Length: 382
Ligand code: BMA
Image 1 (tube, rainbow, N blue to C red):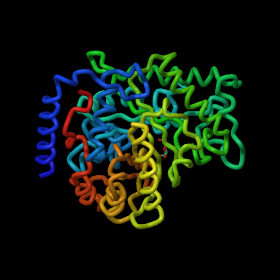
Image 2: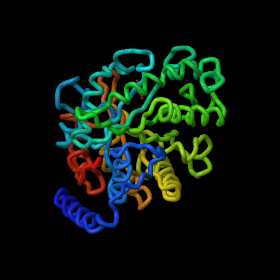
Image 3: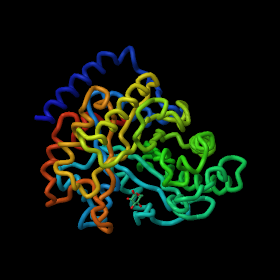
């Protein structure tokens, strides 16, 4: 049913596209990077179009490992329970900057690259986060953030004592991004989401550890350096503070600026429909919807999930009603839940095969609003 409806919609879209072809053959670049690659521009434009009626579903590390398996060709907890891979794949770079062969969650970067290329060829979307080890102490991004002011940001922005080390870290990120290409040399677009959850203080770039100006300087430097110095032109930039903001003013406190952000997003966990947490998430999406509309940006729910799925039917009874609450919430381009990691008790966010919420998750996939990879009505890069 769902697929037939989507295909009918696609036929209408194609017809309209064909009708307007003569008057509209040039590609309009709405990304912040004036030199964005064709595929990146198309990804942005297609997500803009799709998000009018749909929300793509994403899962962190999806084809790498799940509950009871790891690194098995073609496997995915999403696919095992719903029949399809997710439409969006989250990946994490933490550790790359140290020259490690695998990230902080033991995902080898070579495998990550291979899985990113494969998912791109299937039509999926890549989003990348970076829990960067401190360029000052070399410790992980959570270290020395409790009860102390961690001055890493001050030290790594231009003029700071460790600015050169930060640049070396970015060089490694740029090298990895440049390696994401198909056999014909097409660069694979990525949604890069650095310096996230910055309104809390659990990471060294968090609110308690730097001024708003220092944070903005760091974000801007990061984007400028990747684009201008390193020639990265296949990235969309996502700004994703933790949730809980109720006004545009709150959201903009550490916002680096419209020229630096393609996707306005936020992270918020353990949301329950009808409760304070659910209402707060709806409010945050409404704020983003209003801001995105006037700025011509995408908006997204960049991280969420119910740790260990303790809440019954979380996908259809909580997540879905929240993102389906009204026209503004429905406009989010994608929602991503975190990883299924069996080495930590209850550290999973999508049901695995045999889990009691597998049927509910399948029902979630079948909703018209939600798109998994097999439901995508068009190639996002064409
Ligand atoms: C956190 C947890 C950690 C992980 C980190 C980076 O939320 O999943 O186990 O190391 O994200 O992926």
